[in-house]
Image (tube, rainbow, N blue to C red; front, side, top):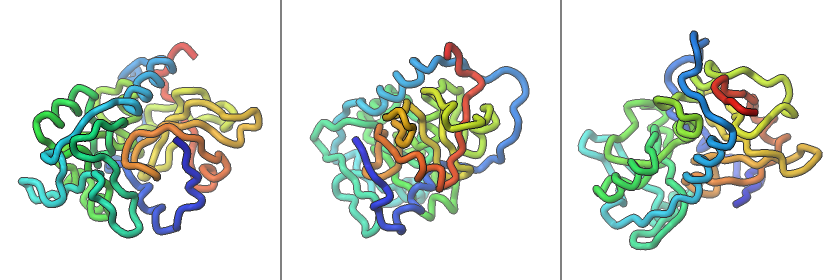
Length: 243
């Protein structure tokens, strides 16, 4: 799946602030909290992208949960003006784990949550950005951008876009990127580098979630110059082994 997001209206770009990010970045002492190879990392990413599931009307939520936290699932009925629309249909098998604000579900946890009638995904909103952790509903399942990276790196918990750099070494050049590395914007969004699409390094292949065109884990080619203009910084996880 590909998407040239330069063609999207400017009002969509605030939606790219899609990760639950509260704690400040700081150096992490001691060994990295996990070890993972690039192959394992990309295999996990692909598993989230291709995961097949079928939701029901019980998994559709548009309103407050039992604690008053609003949930909006990215189902086919979700299509507000100027925002990324929903896509999954009750009773129809679909592909890709949906985005959930603050989500850190394993594939097994996601499937169990769907069976139990939890909300299948929960989209980003400005109100959730304001609430941060208080905007995360325990009655939804899915994964957000930093939760996705945390799962692909086999981290013991979800690390925010403000925390992930503390687990990494910054790369001197984008040309040094290897599969399993990330491109991160502080307190905003992150994506997983999977490789270059051409010898000139003009476009890269990346996995991410919560970015146009869908509220789900996708893999697509992205213009590297455009990402640089948005302030993305390349990092390598210190627990990445076997490069």
